[in-house]
Amino acid sequence: MMPENKTKPTEQAPEEFIRDLPGGKKADALALMRLMAEVTGEAPVMWGGSLVGFGKYRYRYASGHTGESARVGFSPRKQALTLYLGYSLEALEKELEALGKHSRGKGCLYIKRLSDIDEKVLRLLVKKAYEEATDFDAREAVG
Image (spheres, rainbow, N blue to C red):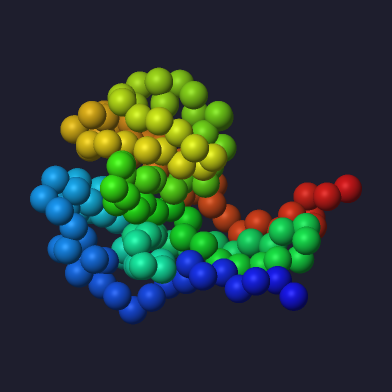
């Protein structure tokens, strides 16, 4: 039996979560929440205790594990704002070069301050990631 996904939509209001953040993180998180809501046309929803997500999609891995996830989202972590884009960031190399100061993980961008990046480029990245995050069934992609 597969473990249950712990990151699920909750009833907590994202504004309440953000309100409790320290100063600079709070301002950046509010601005990012507004930006993602505008770009996606979706209302923000808390996923688990610290991820603000927009939209959702279903996935099924080749192993049979299934679940739902936010199409795009972010979490204001201690070290940086973590943006969960899920989209293959390698395909967006040109845009990422124009983004500004950031680092990357698998499907994630890490931004210390929103003032370090180009908002137009960020909007484009969020839009592309949101559009690409569709239901995924790895069993259909195999053989």
